[in-house]
Length: 256
Image 1 (cartoon, rainbow, N blue to C red):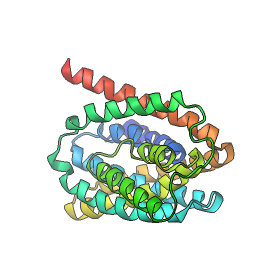
Image 2: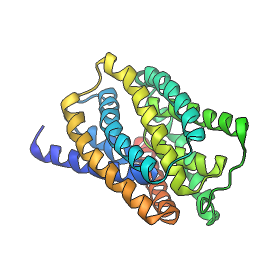
Image 3: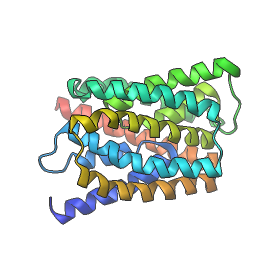
Image 4: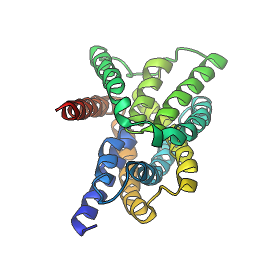
């Protein structure tokens, strides 16, 4: 690998860490960049992406925890089921082609974008839909579904977590991002529990990109905390739009 490719990967890691810390979706940047490495397989790229991502999510989750104080009654059950889902998803990742998911994800993301833009007050303040066990069961269900997706494919996981916390549970965008980072940390750890024994992680590459992702995650979390839910919502719309464009382009190119 030449130095220019390495520089591109480090820049992608920094950008991905920032985006992921604010609203999720860093895999949109980082995973495609890793796939540019000569000789790397899709499973190796996915596994190495998880190693780099967990470094960024660790520092962003810690930053959010100190500065926002996310609701652990939500984050704990969601993270626990997400971890289990991610282990299972990673176990089947090498057997399911990514193009089997792309049309479904594209439709979901278009719906997410329309729903968010059509409701400008969505996520402006926290107004929880349930309390007690109902809230915890809903959080656990979200964690299991999104965690399984993250283990199998990954890009957009943080974005789906933020959306679920906002639209299903009723959080404002800033605390939703704080919860999403704790859960995303669990999904990355769960996926690595499978990928490390499987031997799919490219360690040197993952650690190099991970250092950049860590720095981006720290800066992104501080930016989100300073700017508040309105800023997070704006970045959310931009990231979802980018995901829609990328997946749409991939589908069109695949048919072309």
